[in-house]
Image (cartoon, rainbow, N blue to C red; front, side, top):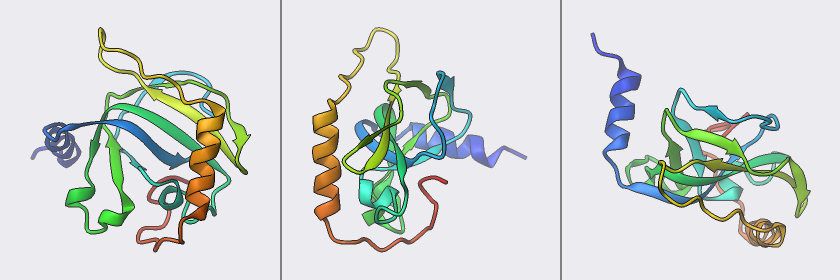
Amino acid sequence: MSDPAAGLSEALAQLPVFAGYSWRVAGFELKTPFTSDAVIPTSRSLRVATENFRAVSVHLFLATGARDISMFSAHPADQEVVLLPGARLVPASGLRELGGIRVQVVLDLPPQGQPIPAVPTDEEIIAWVQASREEPDVTVFSPRRFGA
């Protein structure tokens, strides 16, 4: 019998690469780099990831090799992006308060030889948080889907 998780990862790897920002609730501060051993769901929407700002801490992922699966989702409004097993994740900042929420920037390292994306400034992150706070509440379809 084949491993269903491995099959899912292989199927996801066939989708186009998503490079951009996504969010996930942070239950901890990442102190050291690590390589993921599973699919990590994130959202392009801070409001979705935090379930309308119920969470107090988030990881802001600078994704370089993720996959946007929102088009296949039963809930496309979740704007789901997944980091694949093998993603090399490195803390690019500490966990600090920006715009009323604790944020840690985490870099998804690109393959060797490809450029590392620029880390957003605190001012940029604060502007994104403020813009997200001004959006209307979202329906939470899968509680804790995007973190602890």
